[in-house]
Length: 373
Image (tube, rainbow, N blue to C red):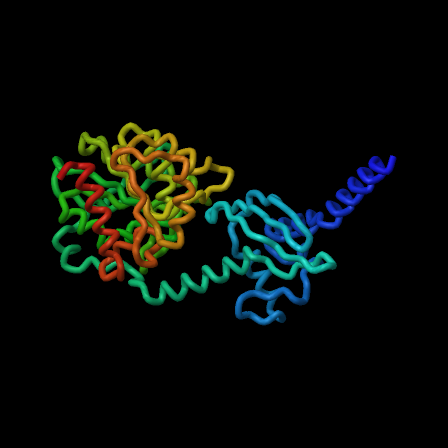
């Protein structure tokens, strides 16, 4: 009887403790704030102690509002574990991918620390500091004069006109398709493409329908999409990559090496895994950028039998390694991690970019093996 009473008391205590640390109400309010892009829902659960980085506590509400308004779509938010004063969460954002971090609470259940926002603000500060020291735009120089381009138009499967710059040196030379990052256009490759010409490659740099003005240059494909009344998302640009591959394969009668930067580097992996005209993929800063619209790149890497080179900044390399963790790399499949801090996207290769030499060295080695030079 005594033993039975002890068991009952133990079960009651466990249930009481579970109720005591149920932070689902606060987490649901946080999700609502992300969805609504404002801090109203979470504000009643915020402690006066909550502050971020070097910002004073008085600025907390303003910072929360700015973060909620600026972040991309939150596709999912789940509680991984809970204990008194703490909850571990997993977030899944479009463009940012999956992230895990903690929320800390006081005895009243009010939030005293939001690790996700702390981390995002820290990353932003580090990125701004690094960006200030970086080359901000490509510099074609003398090579750009030596290797001029021709403007070309091609048609995607849905009728979208895709504009590109074709750097052609000979119909018998290998072919590379260059795809830009978010907010950019084909000008991202203004000094990279001539260098590739000098190395013996034909190159096409395209404007994708998801992009914008960069270094004073318009994204012609995106402009045409707007005229047509479209509001394309990043994932919609896959058709533009496919159009570029088909154009080059037909023009040169050979397979195409597909190269992407940031979001387009992820699309390049999706296209490369299934398109028979792609012989290899070069991917600068890929990630799970598309939320529920696409499966994880972890699955794509498992299916990808072709040669590939993936790389990123050093900070991004851990997440990229995680996506590759279930894959046994085959011949000429590799992840390059820079010795220095590195860069996001293909800007790592711009002329004068500090540390760019190590990226060029890794790229040259990959292409040499691919084409047995």
